[in-house]
Image 1 (spheres, rainbow, N blue to C red):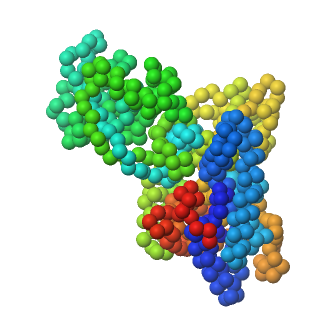
Image 2 (cartoon, helix red, strand yellow):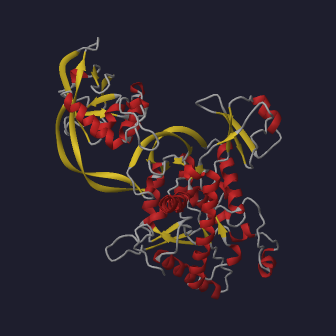
Image 3 (cartoon, rainbow, N blue to C red):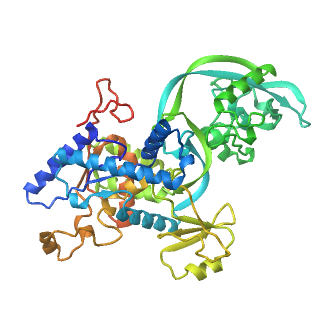
Length: 543
């Protein structure tokens, strides 16, 4: 099966190399008498495709997605997809790829959509999917969460500012003592909920348990001791804690939940009501305002120039903000372990074998998978909300439906209703209104199902059916059990975690069997400067 080209443009040299290697293997096996299936298809590439279409729409028409609305934007993207999918498949055919073109699939087509809905439903029913407020990588340009693997670090010229907070007594009066700290993001002081020191740091031991005042807004926050966040050898030894806008600080909050968290950002990167009096300012404008105010108040100490690694979104190329938002997650503990075991016991083998470590290390972290994206192009999350109905009413309406499951939200009074088919807003009658979750699924959710969804899962038949001679050999006209699992996957190292690992864990979950036996990792093609070739960089070569 082809690692799915995104319908964002044309094929690049990496696709050509990959296709050539797969074509060699497929033709070689056919010449040996095997019935080798090479499955073609394309990926809807949610965030990448929507970003391209939105950017073009803004440049050519001065319109944003909010100007045209959800339905109109999705229609535009479908037209884009139709044009570029034809181009991509045409290129593959020109390259001589000997795919079974009758079985071409698209990750948003009917067959794949059914598999996505079934998998989500199974996860939900088995308690493996949950909704929670978590700190995520946030793209303020596209206004969506992005995966860790879709973020890159870029070193930029930055600054390291040092400020002080005054220590106060129980009545909130200044004691005359100050505690100094340094930061690269002064605007986040507005969201501080604590100052942290190391428990063994003698300089601050007598201050633990006392409070400081944030000069910008007068709010009092505690001084806490935490040996994991604070380092006596680093800077002043004291650290400001902003749990809603820094992953390390969020981890500190989880160890000290009493400090709370305060979100100071809107989804577009402007300051919200918790950042008064800077509400409405862009975060970088707010940074300048905060520095100026702290200097006026006498709490600015110094600033030093420094090279700073800043996380950027791979899609919009804009800086990422750690952002607290409601997202959907898949619990990875058991799923990841099953996928780890499949490689550990030799059922799945990597060539070269050194790439086994990449796979095992990533899965070994067992971080829950954030599967929701705040986009309009993609598989819409099959969850409907109802905050006026009861369990009895849901039971009366859907009790005989095997394709619907529901449960109470953990953080509100609303019901979460998961359905494999679309539900009308009045499905529970005129007294209750159902509303579907507006988010879509991470592109890799549907891509992870590729080995079995393309063969018709969860149905056992498929269009087109097996050829005559295949039917004679199996005695039945069923593609899925005939061709699953596959033998070999050929791909590049950069999607071992994003794609390969997830195909193994979803294959084991849905099919009870690994999706392939061997994973062959080929080199990446770089340009003359050692840079990855990509459409966005404009350094690609049409194969």
